[in-house]
Each structure stands twice: as structure tokens, then as C-alpha cells.
Figure (cartoon, each protein chain N blue to C red):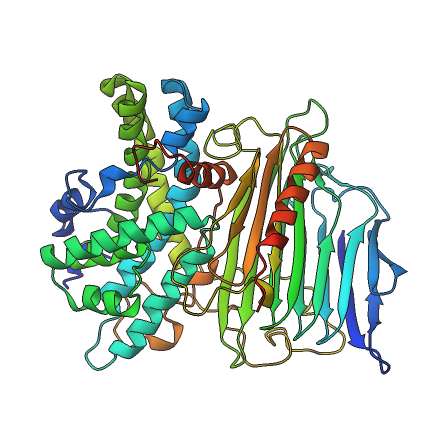
Length: 300
Length: 256
């Protein structure tokens, strides 16, 4: 892929990815996104969303939590797909895809949300492989046969379509709020223009979330000067895992280099553990409650 | 103020747990209150803005440790601007058990606090780790707090798999009252219960089902653990809901 028009690949700007980004974020993309309300249906049922004001607060909170996390995962996936594929190293790449998918798992405590995320991921992968055939999407499908999480697939699809990590993050943040917004229009009979006004008001926050997601990818892991085990007088190595069974894979020290030359293997994925994991306890409760509602219109 | 306290166990020759190291560093003061049980006693106000407190916990293979605190922690702003921080790094060895059950952290108005927990678990370690946050004293708007929780389970080859990574941000006017985040709640709590009894079935691709109740849920994680989560209007209701969620988490343990 041609990097020249994108600078470091993390800033917005004209490029071949722009049109692809529109396709990827379009609600008409035949990948099943319209079937998910992202907790909005259950919130409407419970009466915590009754009008446009509630919906605005719901969307802002969703963007600051699940939206930021999916944006960061999508950016990481896009970066991996853009820089990770080298002939003969599919095995390494499959391991990395599984690792990134495990990072998504660890940030999704609710089993209902994991299931919804994997379902959406499977559908998107099927669509994206036909729209933008690429080795990275093939490898991802093989690496995570049960279906990778939606933001991971979204990032890989974005890369296949020619997008940079920033654009992948923006698409993820955008779909994190537009799905619930349109669902609320249908569930509450809200004025669609009023709801789109809410989305327009969120536009700066969407940009901020995508920037924050990319920044989290570049930032090296903050070294903790107060690590209490590091000052252990017994002189233990702080990286020793429990029981002394090997190197601590969790303890990342080097930052990934987005857009760096191929072959930067060893630090690949080193920054993933530090990606944002902003939780939304109410969304977790909504997702699990929704699963038990026999009358539901939306899958999530 | 900078304080670094350390707690480590070792296996007693006759079996059981010995407290190998119990190094207090005021205001983090440790007191043994029973066999394998230690209370954190705050010997000073705060944390206050600018304070950096750290606790290291190392639970040796085959031993068991319970950590509690004598009272709630009240996080206050300092005389000088600046964040306060509390960092806990804990390692739990093979076959060891750690129960971390402190009283709630209360965020006073104007505070700016950072809590970081890093938990490393051997493959067959067991942990119960509770965190409760109260958004301000009665009728008070809370200051800001950002918590980050990372739990990793290591397999026998030493490879780590993340079990739970979670940030909570409290005190952001845009998101606190969001029906997606905390809604009307004034307290948030979670308890991670993890260990071999909560591992997923090797052949089971299907997600295990959560248990839920009014304001609480027991959420089976993708890895060997369950996150009990609760929201409530006050600390008493929070504890009641969280304990229900913890009971549900214990029921989700599998018999092998």
C-alpha cells in the first residue's frame, strides 16, 4: 500500500482511503450492522432513554467508553494489516491476530457483548473479503475461526480498503454511536432530524476519540516509577511472572511504530496491552438484560 | 508524600502460610489480624493531591493471603495542585489464593486520583479482588478519578493471556450521568473472581451465560474468571448488590 499521501498514517488527509471510509461506515454496508442497537433497545425498555436528551447522554457516554475502545482496537488492527503481512510469515501474523482478538476479549466483560461483537465481526469479514480481497483478511479469518471481534475485523477491512489507522478508528467510533441513534429513532419514534442533530453535535467528540485511539497506539507504555514490586528489597525481577515461569508478556516496554518498515517483528503488538479499556457498567447490564428479553427487535 | 509498602508470603515448613515480609510505609500501614490475613490501616489522611502510594503483594505458590482495610479511603485534594495515585501490583503464584477485599474508596470534591492495579496470576492461582468507588460524600459532587485494572493469566510456558483490562473514569460531567455509563448511580463496584474453577470448557465455543439482578450482574469472562459488577445509589446498597453478584459468580464455578 502506498503510504506517501498519508504522512505517518495517523492524521486525516486526502487519500485513496477517503472514499473507502465512506463505504465502510455507511449503514447500507451489507454486514448486518442495522440489527444492533448497542444497548439502546434495553435502555428504552427500562425507561432510561425516553427522549432526545436521554439519547444524547447515552451516545456521549457510549462514545467515551465502548466507542473509544473499539476505535483503538480498530486502529491497532488496521496498522497490523497494513504493515504485518509478509509472505512466508502468515503463522506469526495469525498469532498476532489472535493476540489482538484476545485484547478485545479482555476489554469486553459482558458475554452478551462478546457474542454480539463476534457475530458482527463474522458478518463484516464475509462482506469485506468479497469487497476488498486481501491476504490480511484471509489470515484473520483463519486465525480466529470462531469470528474475530467487530473492531478487529473493521480495522483489517479498513486496511484492505486502503484506509489508514485514523480512518479505521473514526469508522469504529462512528458506528459505535450511529447504530444506537438510528435504533432509538425506530424504537421511540423520535424525529430523525433531531437525532441527526445530536450526531452532528457529537462530530468533534468523534474526531477526538479517533485521535485519542491513535495516540494510545503510539504512546509507549507509561513506566511506573511507583512500581512496588520493582523496589522489592529481595531484588526480584519485576517482570518475573508468578511462580517464575518465564518472561512477562504483559509488560510492554517499547512502543509500536505505526507505518514502520516491514520486519519490525519483535515489538509488534507490544503497545496493545496499554490500549484503552474504558468500561461502561450500565452498558454491560443493558446487554445482559437485553438477551433475556423475548420480545426484542434488535440482536443487541 | 511517597510511600511503598510490601507484603509477601512464603510457605511455612509445616504447611500453611507465613508472612515473609510485611513492610509498612506510612500512611500505608499493615497489621496482621489473623493467620494469612492483613489489614491496611490508614495512618494519615488521604490520599491527598500529590501523594503517590504503592503496595506490592507477592503471594508465594501454595500460600493464601487475605487483605482488608480498616475503613473507607477518602481521597482528598491536596494543598498544591496535583494528582494522587495508588498503585497495587500483585503476583499470585501456582496454587496460591489472594483475597483483596478493602472498604470503598470515596472521592471527595476536588480530588484528582489515579488508581492502577496490575495482577499477574499463575495458571492455577485463585483471586477475589473487590473494588468499590463512591462518587463523593453525602450530597457532594465527586472529584476526578481514573482507575485502570489489568489482570493477566500466565500459562505453564510463561505466555500471558489478558483476562481483564478495564478503565473506569469518574467525575466527568459529560459521561457520569449517561444511561450508558453509570446512569443515576452514585457508586460503582466490581469484583473479579478468577481461578481454575472458572475456566471455560476446552471444547465450548459458546459463551457462558451471565446472571443478572437489580443493578448487578455476574459476567463470565472469556478467560478463567467472572466479573461481578454493580451500580447503586449508596455504599450500603452497592455492597448488598455486589455480594449478590459475587454469590452468583461462585455459583458459576465449574466442577471438573
